[in-house]
Image (tube, rainbow, N blue to C red; front, top):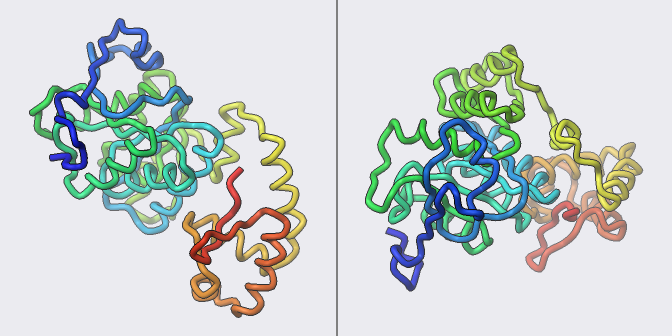
Length: 302
């Protein structure tokens, strides 16, 4: 049970009927929208993008999902996923890491969180003014066929679906198919050609999904123009592009999406701490990297 609420689940859970003005407008457009949805928290009004993939994700796949989610959340998108292990978890965490909004769509009643180990993540989503959504009534267990049913909601409330890491037999493939049928954009972030976790992803590309290699590709395809602040930041980064140390630092911070100390960066990049410190000091002055109170460095949010 969700033990972090001081009120009963019945009073915390809200219900919206299909004809209610608060019902997510994009969801009304799909062929079989739920007659009602239940939710905890607050459903953000931001445009939504779904990020989905396998539960048995690689470290690289999870890093990619966090990076994409964080960047898109910074640009005002709400990140939608299914609260599962692996890519879903990384997508929610990426959005939360930049104080962005995220929605988790469950395949069971909202009196329980599935999987159980994500109760803490569910709490973070609600504290971050996101939402946990389901079409199932209180007491409904998480049955296998319901995961496939909920995938149409993940894609249905989103303007686009991004598949990060999907085997041939994957719920993410079903979500992508729903998205295509619903007229949503389907993007695929590719991986190693021979890795089984990406065979479904690459099949989607062969079948017409759009290959993307960066958040900028996605924003461009969604016709989202770069903000003035983003342009200024990119120009500053490009000025340091010829500096191999700065380039290595940018890459490490972008890939990991978590603040890192000088020691951690040195371990990850194999650069000397003194060399790192000198370059980071300059980047902090330029405003493209910031330091938190614990001595961790991260790329300054847009």
